[in-house]
Length: 95
Image (tube, rainbow, N blue to C red; front, side):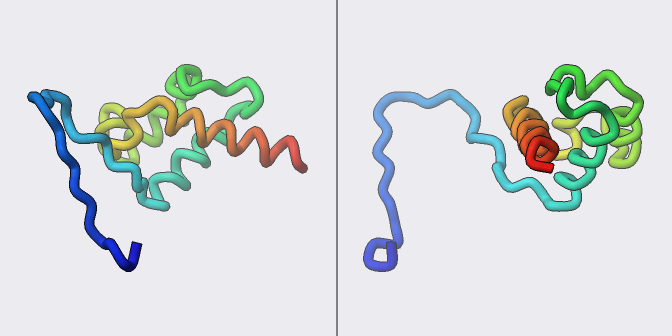
């Protein structure tokens, strides 16, 4: 990488898709999402069940948002929330 610090991307044809979502989530937002996840049974938690309890609404209220996407664009991806839940399941399993 030091020898070749640049990359060239050649694309043919039209690309009408949007750029990918930002992947870096600020640590404070990540910690708040994890804390909201931990307030319920993590072993029964899924990304869709995450939006049902009142902790989700308090998280949205704290950031003055109407959805996770409004808090940060990378939270619009359901896999990000699933990764948080999976990581917390593993931590509980190891305890």
